[in-house]
Length: 423
Ligand code: SAH
Image 1 (cartoon, protein in one colour):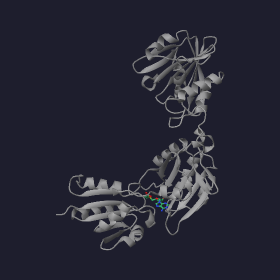
Image 2 (image 1 turned 180 degrees about the horizontal axis):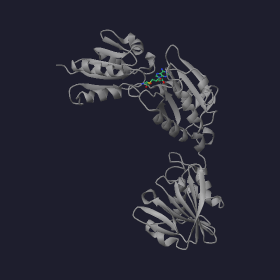
Image 3 (image 1 turned 135 degrees about the vertical axis):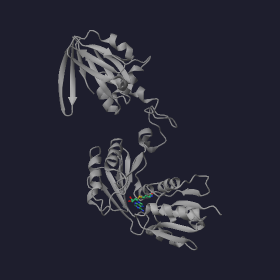
Image 4 (image 1 turned 180 degrees about the vertical axis):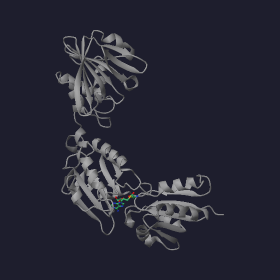
C-alpha cells in the first residue's frame, strides 16, 4: 500500500499573499484537507480535487485522529491551521496522538511540518517594529493551562522586561483573564507602556488599536486579537510602535561613529566578559557608594558585584577589597564575636535578636551561628559564595546563593561586635 503522509500546514495570518509556497504545494499535493471552517474558507481558492473535512473549534483532537486515519489508508492529508502550525497549533497534539497510536518516524506515515507566519509576526508588522528586542508570547487561555502557571509566566516576563505578545487574550467566556494579566504587568511596568491590539491581521476585518497598558482593557479585544505589550523602552512615534535594539547606545546618532569605549563587531563593554570591569570602574569613581546600591544600579545580584570586586587583580579599587572565603575557613574567621545582632524576618514582621559570644559551627549540612540558648542555621547547600568585604575600617561577611542573592550578611562594627542581617 502507498504510504500516507500528514502535512501540518501553517497558513499564516489569513491573506493568501502571506501563505508560503510550501504551504500551497502541500495543499495542492493533498488528497484530504482537514481544518477549522474559517481556515478551509481561507484556502478555498486552492482547492480542486481534495476531499474537505471541516471541523469545529473544539474538535482539535478529532482533527488529529481523523488525519491519522486517512494517512493509514495511504492518503496524503493536509491538516491546516492559522499562523504557524507549531505555535499554539495542531503540530504538537498530532505528534502526541501519533505516538499514542504506536507510530514512529520510520513506520511508514511521513509527517511534514510546514511553518507559517505566526500572529505575533503578522500583527507586529502592522504596527511597526515592536518585537525588535527580546520578546515572548504568552497565551491567556486557561482551557488547558492552569491560571497560576500563566500568572507566573506573566510575572517573569514582566519583571525581565520582555516585550510580550498575548495570544488568546479574551473570548466570549474568558473575559477576566486579560484584566488579571494587566494587573500583574502593572506591578512591573508603567501604565504608559505602549500596547497594540491587532485584530484579524491580514483578514477582511483587520483592525489596529494603539493604546497603553493602563487603558488596554477598555478597548475591544476578542478571540481574533493579539495584544502586543511594549517593554520599558518601547515607544510610539507617529503611530508606529518601536522597541529599540540598542543601536543608539553603541553608535552616535545612528551614524557609523561608535561611542567611546565600544568597538564595531565586538561585544559591548557591558557584554559577557566586559561588564565586571565596568562595575569596578564605577566603584573606583564612586568610592562612597555601597555595594548594595551598586548592585541596584546595575540591576544585578550582590554576588556579581562581590565577584567583580574580588577579581580586581592588578587594578585594585581604592579603599575596597573583597576576598572569596572557603567554607572550611569560616570557623576560624570570626572567632572574636562579642555580640551578634540578628535581624529576623517572618512574613511582614521583623525584629532583632542579640547573641553574646556567638561562634560559627559548620557541619555537613548546616552553617550555624551559635550563641547561648539561640542559634541561626543556614542549609550548607544553599550557600554558593562566602565573601569577606573590607571597605574603610569596616568588614562585612556575605553569604550568597547560586543566583548571587544575599542569604546572610554579617557586619563587623568598629567595636568588633557583629551585626547579622538577612537578605
Ligand atoms: N497558530 C496560530 C495561533 C493559534 S492561537 C499562530 O501561529 O498565529 C489563536 C490566537 O492566535 C488568537 O486568539 C489570536 O491571539 C492569535 N491570532 C491568530 N491569527 C490572528 C490574526 N490573523 N490576527 C490577530 N491575531 C491572530
